[in-house]
Amino acid sequence: MKSPKNESLSRRLCVFVGSYADGPGGGSGGVSLYEVSPGGRDLTLCSHLDEPRQAGFLVYAPTLWTLFAVDERKTDGRGPVQSPAAVHAIRVEPTTRTMKPLNLLSTVGPFPTYLSVAPGRHLLVSANHGSFEHVEHVVAGPHGGWDVEYLYDDSTVVTYGLGADGSVESIQDVQILREGGTDPNSSPQAGGHAQAAAHAHCAVIDPSGRYVVVCDKGSDTVTVYELGPKLRPVSTYRFAPQTAPRHLAFDPLSDRAYLTCELSSELVSLAFDASQGVFTFLGRCSSVAEGFTALNEPAEVRVHPGGSFVYVNNRGEDTLAWFEAGTDGSLRRTGSVPLAPSVHPGLAARSFAIDPTGSLLLLADRPGNVVRSYEIDHNTGTLAHLADTAVADPAYLEFAEFPS
Image 1 (cartoon, helix red, strand yellow):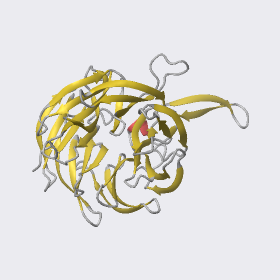
Image 2 (spheres, rainbow, N blue to C red):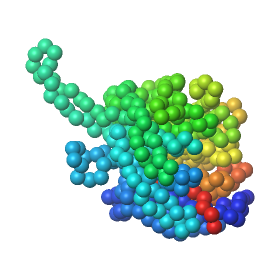
Image 3 (cartoon, helix red, strand yellow):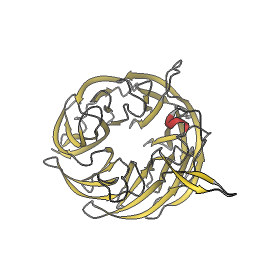
Image 4 (spheres, helix red, strand yellow):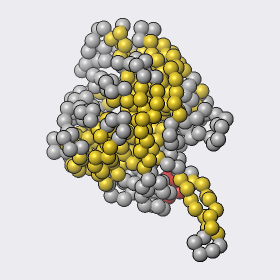
């Protein structure tokens, strides 16, 4: 088996860790940069920034030496007292592995949950989830008397133009997602109102770089947009009601994509026709072990660089599971490792990442206040626990390579 250092002697493997402030771990939030030891057992802190305090999603652009991070919050009204929901650009000095804030731009829509960088196009795309809370507006009834109108946050997909230095310069386009789903539904999430409005949870650029794919938990849809400063809708794949597609990951070696469904607790395989921007259903399976019946919500999905294995973390079952992906699109769960018990599905292990060689997996186990390191068996996909590194309320992980 390869170790992370054997791919090249001229690079150092590092990982960015985004953390939440004011969580049960008592940390200050922000972004930390760690160097990963050969073999992946040890993480050594290189630098830390306190902002953004709710660093829930990160993406690194190596050609710009820039890390982009969301401040995953809702702006608190007119003239906000706290920092607004925003996208932050952070300059990374590769030799010293230190970070310096570049700038930030407020999001158009609350609770940004995902970022993607378009290679070579100086475009950044965000998905803004919106909250589950509502506002009651008192309105005159159509036939006299008074009524109550329930208003929910808008969920949006936003494209940002990037400067030559990696700064976030301007908003290029905003797509407002209007459609909701079954409301109320059978899920206890948000008291049965988790689909009262749209909730975009990812905006993934496909391997061709032509499209951005948006999973909307609220409307049970996956929409493909032609990527550019202005997004153009190309196609929509509609799932069954109360499915809630959350995150999607492409296989780097084929036309396959894999998707977690938050409310139905499933992993789905799809074929993607990049010439048309269209998905075709291939297969599905439960994300949890046979016989598990308690509440569960899968979150992240990652494909091994070799293409044969897919990994999903389950919030409720509290596992990191791996699946064998068949050439026909079939999926079979073949193993799992336990994680710290979740407080509830929203406060659980949420994110993990696989290093570029496919030898190491790191997971942000928020309830345990640790980042867990696992060695990956290239032949079976099996994970072997290596070590834990103490980090308060870790939320997201992003690998990067820097010169030695």
